Image 1 (spheres, one colour):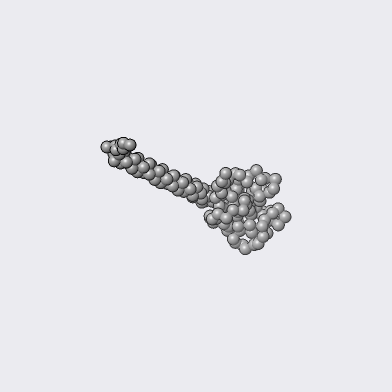
Image 2: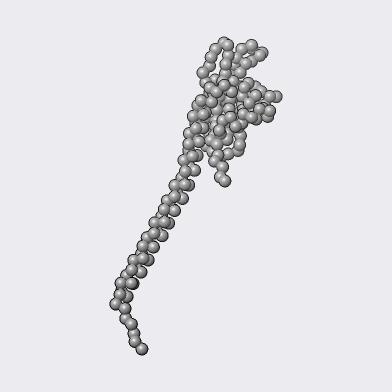
Length: 176
């Protein structure tokens, strides 16, 4: 029996080693790329949420100038004042079409001075302290801004203004 001894067997082994090393590098970089992409995509949700929170802050500052809530009186113009009567009408069950008017999950107005208590509705208004316009029960950070709250008092025949605070939170990102 004759034995064949290939002269190039060392070269073939070196080629196989090199091929395994190249495959290992490709697998390593593929895994590193997948890890990087998953990290960046998970960070994207946080960036979108931060953007929505920033929008909520800006909206709290400017919402008192929207026609749906702006106070307008023939006696005087009040920049940044909120009409409590309009807010109560927006709160009504029949007016839920406005709940998606602003892209946020929570929006409410609190009367700070004079101190009152209770959630406002048509029955106890104006002897209440809070008007909840949107409440989708989220636990996001609330942003606030001080505002003037005005209403027309028919007994006095004049406008009455209070010190108030408006609170809002960003809209939650729904995962699919």
